[in-house]
Structure formats: C-alpha cells, structure tokens
Length: 280
Image (cartoon, rainbow, N blue to C red; front, side, top):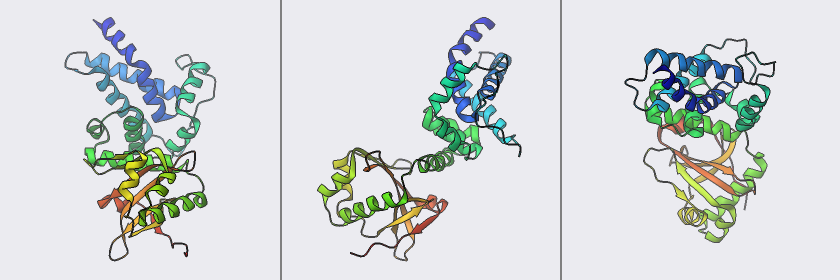
C-alpha cells in the first residue's frame, strides 16, 4: 500500500518541485519542501484525499509559505550555486529549473511578500484557483486575487520600457481615443491586445478591433499618470481624483499589448501621480 502511495507521489514530484522552486528560489530548499510534503502524505495516508495533486500542491504551498516567513535578516541567496549535497538536485537539474523560471523573475519574486509571492506563483504560473489559494494564505478568494494582482504589477513593472517611450504611447492613445480615431487606435494596439479587469465577474475585451471600438470616443476624463512608477492612465472624478486606473503593458514592438482596468477600493492600493498633458 505504501509503495502505491509513493508511486503516486513520484508522479507529482516534478510539478511540486517546480512550484517550490519558484516560491523559494533555491533548489535545495525546494527539495526540502517537497520531501516535507511526502512525510505529511505518508503520515496522513491516501484515505480521505480526493484530488491528490491538489492536496500536495496545497501542502507544498503552506510549507513554502512557512519557510519564507521564517527567513531572518540573514537573507539567503536567490539561487544556490554551491556544490550540491547528496539530497540536492545536481547541476544539470538546477540549470533546468533556473532556465524554466528565468533569473530575472526570481529576482523580482524576492521583492514580494510571502503571501503575494505564493498567490502569484500558484495562480499565474500554475493555474491554481483563488478559491484554492485563499485557505493557504488565510484570506478570502477576493483578497487572494488582490495579492496576485499586486504581485503581477511588480513583475510586469520590472520589464517596463522607459517612461519616455511609454509616455509617447499613452499620449497617442488618449488623443486617438478622445477623437474616436479607430484607425489610429489600431496602429497603437497589438493585434492580440487584451483589456481585462480584476473586478470579479468583469468580462475582458480581446483583439485590437474590439478594444479600439471600446475606447473610441471615450477617455475624456482620462489623464496620463504614473501608477506605482509605471506609465498608465487615470480616469478622474468630478473632484479630480482617480477613480479608475488603467495599467498599460507595451509589447516588444512598442504597441499596447495588455490593458488592465482597476476600479473600486483597490485604487487606493496604488501610488498614483497624475501628469500634465502636453500642449497641443
């Protein structure tokens, strides 16, 4: 019976190791977290566990969260480069893990809080639902969604182009939107551009034609703004205060690849500085 359980566990080991590595940034610690998951499974037994992979992912997530929280002022290296111990993956396996994540992403993940990091890794990289993430971080599903959203903004911000280049794009977009210039908007939008909202239940708009039509004639109260240090758009209320934020992600070709609308109480989570517009 134990052999059968061990075999099931081994099938999940690669995915669990990948989750743990993205959480911890250390191949050795990832192996420790995966081993702890096996010990807990061995003690608990298979009875009563419906979806074993989901159960193991939850356990590994909680173990990693505890490990991140227990790190002291002696900050550990993002990536282990010392000679591997007997239980640690070899150099080839470490290189494979590092390549699969990207060193730049690991560095950015290190700047996130433990709960932000877990929510982002599980949802954005492994497709775990916020309903499943919520009990791991001890928050509601909506709060877990916001944790992942904040983490996503930081990750995206790390790869943003210069503010000057973004400003030119944002100004051109606002002019075209206000003037209802659909053809101009199409030149500024990536063909696969996506407009999405973190508001639960809000439907996204995808594709340059649909997004261009959505914005044509709008943005009259929108202004360019620095949002958490990155160029975006703030829609102002009658008192001149931001009540909708539009996060803009340029693509490799300089066109808008993604837009994310933030509204409601979450707007207060951002550092927003509305910018003056260029004279016509």
